[in-house]
Image 1 (tube, helix red, strand yellow):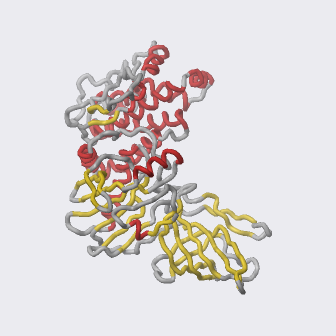
Image 2 (cartoon, rainbow, N blue to C red):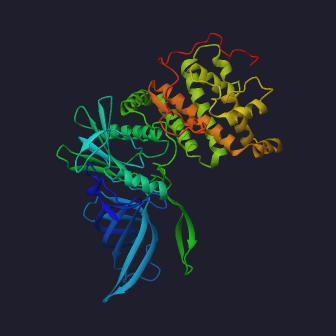
Image 3 (tube, rainbow, N blue to C red):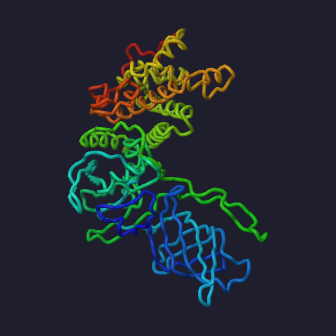
Length: 504
């Protein structure tokens, strides 16, 4: 099944099945490679599997080409109707067959740089975009082709964001949990109070939403297929932004006939990454949409500080990859500690300037830096009783250590992973998988709490450590808890600061 871009612009974008391709353009296409050109009917489409990519196919007659002139490899593709649509492509395959009295040829390839906006894009009044594998939430009422809940409003800096859940999202979620892959589950709209949107402002806002929505979902699910519209709904610009802007790496090779051709070493990696599944724990389960709004306001305050934007991107990226257990549980533990150390350094740079403890911060161990950060933000460092296996593990393995808390447990296991001596390897081999999983969950929980604290969030969250409680899911929503602080974030207190104590 394929869906046209016109369908994608409707308030409710319907997909009967996940992984359905999306037809972005049907037009007369011209392929150009050096002095070789050919034209024909074609289409450009978004394909989700095996990973999101934008490809093209076109039919044309190349019977007049000399043998060996087949346009394989790097080429240029343009629309004959709209000359602003020009792309760098890589032709992968050429198939020919005789139809009636001529040979019909189908050319297939990938678009390496799908830039579809004008060189100097003009203002628009609204931007519509789509969300892939986004979270499910109650939301307010939506009335269109159906009546349902699932609308989310976000306001900040005179920008208004509206997210609508598609009317068949429940069916899509159910299928995605079984087979994985991708589906557009929500449509979004971005407007500004002034009525006009500069393209640079749009890029910044969509980039912010990409990281904020990832933090809400615990997976990559940012805005894709964005379209700028005028006040009367006419398309001004559009972006096909589900793949990277990076070029293919090219390698010389020989085809089956021994002719020299160029092939890509690697395909287009994801600049805008998307996670091909919807399962996994999220801190937003059961959280009211008004609380999501509060988190958004706090997030944007940090995002708008340009000195914090890049560290925030990195911290959320590490959080997502550890939450997705990229590289397995052990690698994810390393990623979660990296996020914690980054956030500790960021907090120290902001709150310890000119103070005597700042000079010693970089000299103390990772667990001490993380412990200082958690204590400074009023986040408990003791291992919760719910994670009893890792608590017992620390009582035994760290019995001679001064600290037997969460930061020490995470650093202890992480050091065993990245310093693969014989002793450390044996330590990891002897550690039960459940203990590693609890350490990972504890590290991710710390990252969630720190980010929410930095966003000055005071609402509820779904505590992932609740999963380790005996019979924890036998009814109720006991995992929905209040954040463990009740005050706004203040400057760090240096009284009795453990960083200054050289004996610790």
